[in-house]
Every structure is written in C-alpha cells, then in structure tokens.
Image (cartoon, rainbow, N blue to C red; front, side, top):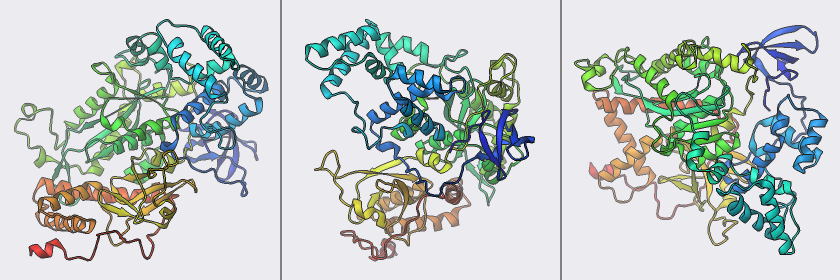
Length: 629
C-alpha cells in the first residue's frame, strides 16, 4: 500500500496512529497523534501507511506485466485519464466525482472503485479490465461499430486535415446509420481518441517535426519539466578512473556507471555502478533505484548512514537515448505499469540529453583529480601511470560517488539561476517564493515487485526436463503443469513463458506462475552446480569451444569454469585481466547475497528428488579434462 505524504493521511509511526498536517522538509512531516493529540515532527523514513488489520482479506495477486496485451493497457490508460482530475486533493468530494461520471459515461460507484484501486497502489495494472465482466481487452460495442470507429479515427481524425472530435463523431454516426448499426455516443468516440498517445495524435495531425518541438527536450528549455520528477533523463558512461582488486589492491580497469537526473531540479535520482558494460539490467536497476527510497541502501550497502539522498518516487517522463538496452520490452512494460512515459532521443538531435551529459561530465572531471585517473586521452594523461597509481576499490568508488552526488545536490548551478538542486527540488515539492507546492512523492512501493518488474526476461517453453537457457537446465515441480502446454492463442504451437533472470547470478530463474499469480524461484536442475554469473558462464563456454569440445553440456562448462578459476588464482594476481575477472566474481557474490534481502517474498522451490531425464545427457560421463591429461 502506498504511503502518501499529504495532509490528512493516516500514518503509522512506531506503532502509533498519526495524521499528517504538512510536509516541512524533504525528510520530515508535521503530524498529530490520534491518541495524545500532540503535534510532533516525524521522520519520513520511519513512516508507513496506517492499515487496519484484516486477516480474512485475500492478498492481491501479482500481474506479469509482459503478458498483458496492448489493448488491456490501452483500456487501463483510459480509466486513469478519467480519474486523474480526482487524484489531486484540489478536486474531490461527491460533486466532483458525479461531474466526472457524467462527462465520462461511467457510473459513480465505478469511478470510486477505480480511485481506490489506483490510490492504494499507484500501479496502472490495478486499472486493467476485470476478468469477470465483458471480455477482457474488448470495448463494449459490437465489432462492426468498433471497426467503423477505428477506421474513421485513423483515416479521418488522425490526418493533417485536423478534423475535430465533433465532426469525427458525426462521420462515424453517419456511417453506422447507413449500415443499420447503433450509433455510438460522442463520449465513446472521444474516449477512443483519448486512449491514443498524445504524441502520436500530434504527429499525425501536424507533423513529426512539430511533435519534436513540443515533446522532445531542447537545450535550455525542456518542455514538460515544470516540477520535480516530471522529466528524468538516464544514461551510462565509463568512468575515467582505474579501480583496484579488493584483496590484491592492484588495478582491474575502468567501471561503468548509470545515472538518472531530474531535469527540473538537477537532482540525481538514481545510480548503478558495475564492471559490466551497459545493459538492460543496469538500466533497470538504475530506474528501480531512482523510484525507491535510499536510506536503507545508504546505511547497509554503501556504509554512509548519515548521508542524505532524499529523492524517491515515480517520474512522469523517462528520457533515454536509442541504445539497445533502453529499447527492450521489459523497460517498456515496466514503464507502463508505473505510468511512466518512456521517450527516446530522436536521431540526429545533439541537443538532447544535455543535463545528464553535464552531470556525467562533471563527475568525470572530478574523478580526474583522483589517484588512478585515466584522463580524456593519452596526450592529457602524459607520463602518468594510471594503473600503478590506482587506489580505490569498487566499494570505495561507490562511496565516493555518493558523496560527490551529495555535494552536487548542494552546489549552485548556473542552469537553474544559481540555485542548488536540493533547494530547487525542495521548493518545487514544498512551495515557496511564490511557487505552489506539488507535494512529496508517494512512498511505499513494493520494493521486491519494483526490482522484478525492471529485471530482464527470457521466453522459453517448458519441456518434460524443465527449461533450458544458455545450455543450462532448470527445473522445479511448479513447472510440471506447464510441460508442453499449448499456446492458448495458437493451439498448434507450444506456449512460451517468461523467466526473469539476474545476470549476476544465473543459478535461479524467477517464474511467474499463471495460476498462483506469484513468482517462484526455479533452481538448476542439477542441484550440485554452483552459483555463477552469466559473464563467467559464457567465458567458460567459449573456452570449451576453443578447446575443441564438440558436445558441450553444462557439466563440461562448469568444469571449464573451475579450471579457469584455478588458472586465474595462480596468474591473478599477476595480470589486470585476471584481477578484473576475479573482482567481477566478488561483485557478483555480493549481488547474490543482496538478492536474498531484496527478493524475500519470491517462493523458494527445490528440484525434485528424481528430476526428469534429459535425452542424450549423461552428467557422469568422463570429463574432457581427463582425456587431455
């Protein structure tokens, strides 16, 4: 349940009920105790929604975002547009609800139900069409009327003729009358038009160039960034500094960082530091980090509990470049769920992304002052020995970046009239100097759900021996009902299921069970195999192929992984490549340990005592290493 930090909201603080009077800072609210009636200042990080315990209330099932058809998402967006005016405290009460019901054509009780569902979660999936009523994803009108509406919207309204909604409705009603069909109400047509993206409507009625001027950011003046979190930019960069191995303290190369920044205030909203090149995983982790509160992470993971990073909440628009890691279905569907509008950098528009690029440039310039800096080019570096002078581990660098961000938030910025980002962010949310307050963003999103929603997935059928991904076999009893399951839309084909996977630890998959509506952990079929990262696994498979192994299975790959580790342990600590590989394993081990804390509610499963036989696979056959020796 969402924690809304607004006046009048009931909250729990140390087991006591309080009502919020007002937000007085980014980390504090003024609240009144419902028992003592005393007014107190409460820290936001210790607040949670006040919920009356209801043991008999069934738990809301989860939704697999990537299984939701586009027409259902479209219907949910239409519902959200109907209730959006009522989600603000500025328009509330029965009179406002009745007005919205009258203009939208929906019942008052329906409007109230949608408001409750969305207000409790902030998730678009809670506004999806119900399974019990008329067919999911379909409009109420018959197919013939719908076909006429769709055709006229596409070829009459969405044209450079710029016909009005009223004339479009009249045209549709005329054609329906000619065909002897029931004429639709004008609000029905208007809802269909409103369900189309605003940018798409503008492009087709005016031009793509005109749409870019309205919807794309421009250096100096960025549309749609009139308040905090209205528009957030995200991008990656390699950092110009060498980091060292945790144990040997010798150089292992340059890491990468993914940043997200609030365009309105220049507050950094999220960060992900990694040794791997940018990927969908690092992009998803950064967005999740941006949405979630950071107090626990700062205290337990970074080791800086006294540093403030009071930035959380869902952004309105997420601006990205055209890199492949930003173009996947995972990020698109996750953005839909949290009502984030993903927008991409138009081709040949160098002015795009100026704010995130300046942040990365500032961080890079500061890093050049540290021991182990690589500088911009060999000429700038000169005789400086970057590797020999390197001193910082990955953890040291993470702490340095957090402290850099904390200072960055409090430093004057010319682009916002000399104001510090945190001051502008505070004023945008809490008001002041003639600026009306937007209010603090809601907290309390299910952290596990957020992290899984922004995790990459792979589609596979379920065979009698389980699931195979990258030559690795996975199995758990929860998969048995779905062995060779037919595709409901194409019965002659087998159904593909989506399996989420963390590249840091591929010893487990996260499977959304369609009946239970919950995520289950699917382990290796062979329980004797050790955890491994995707990077390590692929390197071992390459080594096996290079050695001339013709029939490669997972046992052989893990034997090569072990042998590589032995070689690395001996050389390691002699070459930078070996040290970097070893540090990767340390980072991946930390990620596995962290995953246990981040994803506590995924249902753990065990491989069955007698897993199904894999045709042609014998895990006990003689090792290729023995042949070589």
